[in-house]
Length: 637
Image 1: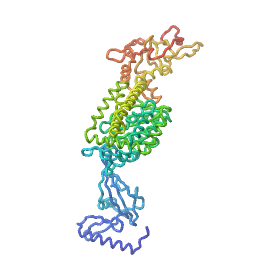
Image 2 (image 1 turned 60 degrees about the horizontal axis):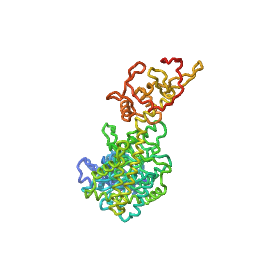
Image 3 (image 1 turned 90 degrees about the vertical axis):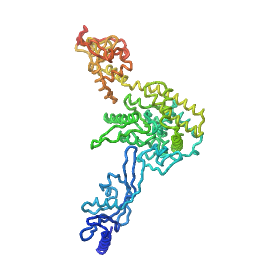
Image 4 (image 1 turned 180 degrees about the vertical axis):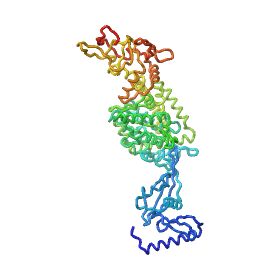
């Protein structure tokens, strides 16, 4: 900006004085008003004798839009501001959160050094007052989330392009999806875009995608996510497999139902994000599939623990439909966030915890277990937007069904209960519920397709029959995985390992070297006399007779917890919880009435122990039995 000449300065001051004089005619003593003159804000203050004018800035600004944002839990405001320098140069349009407006730091942060306030007492307050006085903002309400909203007597589904209603796409419904959520962008429903041949080809590709037809359950997860508004989905889907098994590619196909921008290399979230960030983003991805990619518990013990904690936080929140409560800096409860759609996670590792794993449907994918032709075709359909078109049409049908009263939460429960009964009681108590949720999602997808005359009843029946068989097979496989991950099984595995590796040992009931010593924590070592003797290794954690293993529950659990921590899968259950789990799993050979322990005399002391069948816990074979050093007559140590 060039230097102002004395003549030009005099002209400006004269014009400002005239403006002040005109304003002063209607001003009371001490009253302050603001005006724009010569491209700048000015303050006019009425004094006893005359009005005075002060220049406040070298720019003007105004709020053109006041945006009320709603994320499903909290409401906030954002002000859209435009400005112009006194030279006429426009300043960038900016969005300022309401809680930052009064601080005025945004002038320099957003517009740099070109926009200069004039330094004088309370200049920030005066400039802000001038901006507000000269603003007539448009009032706008926007949603920051996807999914269903109740709009008077109808349901509408929010997506990046607007709202899908029973009548089509309503672009007047504005959403502002930030970050990775921008990809949630469905097209307008169009019945002419989907042919029967095409839809049937899509379904067949999903059926053949994985070895045992589990792809149909993955397809069911897409629609089950969409109807979460009517009945929350309390299950997560987990695709596990080594690197190169194409789990991310499959997840990308499923995610592309919600927008063609998504694919295996562009997914909404990754496990490297913090737990709080994932919870909030999953909360905003309402009634939609939310992929969290690449769970890999590697690194330092602290990094591994953080990964498992994040998975625990997110997946348990999905199952319980409740977020983790936190306090603000002022000790006020913050809003708790949790997934309001359905989480699809992928990873080479599986998050720790029997209870946590029971809240997921786990599909293990082998490198040779994916039909690459089917996957390639589905990826092309996703990239072209055809899968998103399918879901858009399906959502319009759901909106119509909800409006006419033919679809609500009772519909979801009805079909879930039906498939739960069909699955029986295989594995963990949650497994039939989890799989039934995916099956009923597939059912709703097929009901839409049949109503749109894209498939017939015979095709629907065949697909559902195949999916039910796949679900039953998956239930059996998950039961085996649940057994391996259970606290009882892990306790037995670690107990066996502790004895076989010499981390701990058990003795005979009189405290001496037992039979099968090398399998029970004893090692042959050469004594000073040249003979070999059995010596106990580690801490004593129990006793043994010919047929039973008697374990000191506290001593054994202390050692087992250390070992579990060493392998990065901490066994955090209490002594009481472990003994209860062992009893329920049928591991305890003898117990007292109404107790999980059994009393036995060990080393002349009456003790309460966990009593196991020795042959069931330890795989023992007859062996040479060494004697303990200096104990040739089987005397106590």
